[in-house]
Amino acid sequence: MDTPTSPTAGVLLRLHAADNVLVATGPVGPGPTPVSGSGTLELRAKVTLGHKVAAEAIAAGAQIMKYGVPIGSATDQIPAGAHVHVDNMKSDYTPTYALDATAGGDS
Image (cartoon, rainbow, N blue to C red):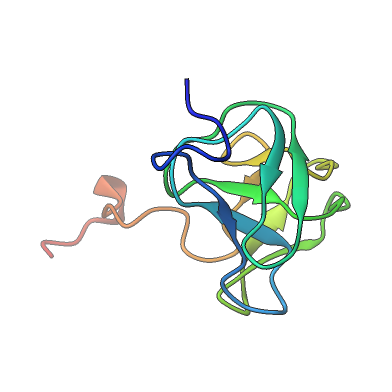
């Protein structure tokens, strides 16, 4: 099992000062997890490489900020330290990149 001092343990990284999510640099949690440059955050569950966690409580309907830009909105209340994923956020952009077969185009 990885511990915060283990060379394979992940940390949480804030990609931009305006972000309300942090990104896992490896497997992390549950429990107190180092945040690069700013202490620790209590994670509610294990999160793997590249996944997002709420850096702070995020209200239902609030924008999810990553890279300093909105990437979607919360579909439910997201507590600090919770995994931010398709079960509690939605994209505010194109819902799918797949062509709609019913659109009638030959694209």
